[in-house]
Image (cartoon, rainbow, N blue to C red; front, side):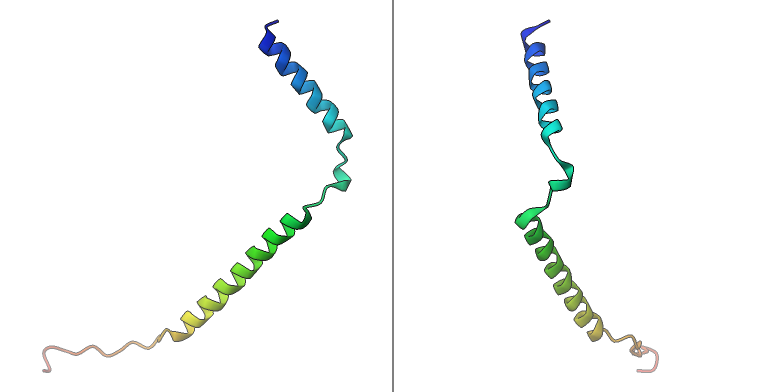
Length: 71
């Protein structure tokens, strides 16, 4: 076995041991996860507020165009 393969297997066995110690029930997103989620929520709210304002300014009635033959 080559030295690099031996080193890779040593690191892999260390990760397996770490995975055994890892408790999936104790994992939480933490403060950073909350802050990211809150920033995304505020950004979506601001975009929806802006979109509602812009849609409110749109006139859906068609303007009569000037007929060049009548002038």
